[in-house]
Amino acid sequence: MTFCFKLLLTVFLYLGCAVAYAGEKISIVVAGIEKQIYLPVKLAEQLGYFAESGLDIEFLTDRNGINAETELLSGSVQGVIGFYDHTISLQARGKLVKSVIQLTQTPGQAILVAEKSAKEITSLKQLKGRSFGVTGLGSSTNTIIRYLAQKSGVQSNAINILPVGSGDNFINAMMQGRVQAGISSEPTISRLTSAGRATVLLDLRGIKETQAVFGGAYPAACLYMPNAWVTTHRNEVQKIVIALVKALNYIQTHSASEISDQMPASFYANDKENYVLALKNSKEMFTADGKMPEGGPETVLKVLRDYDKSLYGKHINLNNTFTNEFISNPK
Image 1 (cartoon, helix red, strand yellow):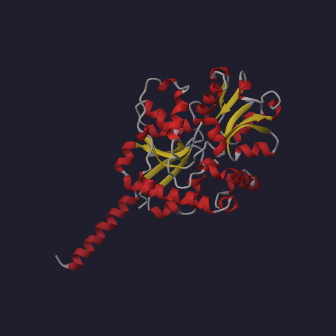
Image 2 (cartoon, one colour):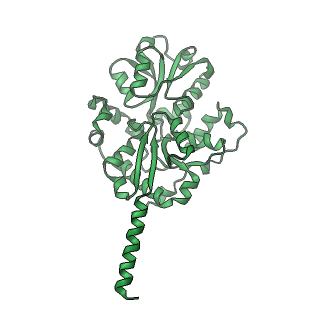
Image 3 (tube, helix red, strand yellow):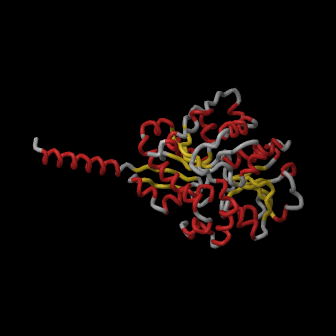
């Protein structure tokens, strides 16, 4: 076999593999892609970091984290951009998934009280008998309010917890009086507070506030995938993680205004100035490098165990719920 023929054969095989590889679509669902807690995903896409990876990735959006989890379990998607607590609750049900990169170290959310109820609800205890809005039953917002209510001496079943979604749906539920309070993220928080339509009862955007409430870092937004898929698609996972790490680095090295300039105008909800201010005030929620915050998994497990009966008597191996491997080996 001549050298030229060997060379042509090698090139042919390489190109053939590349075409086949490029044709493998990876679907990832985001629990509300317009939410600032998930900003690194859209930012990485806008900056071309995913395109650089050579992967064929499609991002779907579902504003309810529990729906995103269901899509993952059905096999219709390969990953979820959602909250880390799902990896623990799923393990309790015998489903092994893990966070391959941690995007935030706080929930990035706040408990809001509607303007009309501000005088009657000045503490978590006063949520008793009230209607409270969450994105969905079984969602991370539902997890947090149930834990905080119980911590304040109020049984969660004493609160009328309603699934109202996020964004405009959440705002409408509050404005129409269907809920007197609720938990949401940016830019919804600032849209309501800047217009004087709601006040913040409890802030979970900052690091200090989060540690005061939960007793430590509370890892939230992440990319979680089935452990089996991660094992058999290590190269793809690595490339996705690299793109998201680049986005996290961009957030650390650029102003809120510069970051916002990269986002689609539709994300601003017709108020870019407010969007920029909201991001400026909550940028610290993002991790610097994508690593799981030390002690974070233990904090989340404690929160879940305090009220979630599905975890009672269950052994949870936290080492199977996350990995820093793809962060520690970026190449």
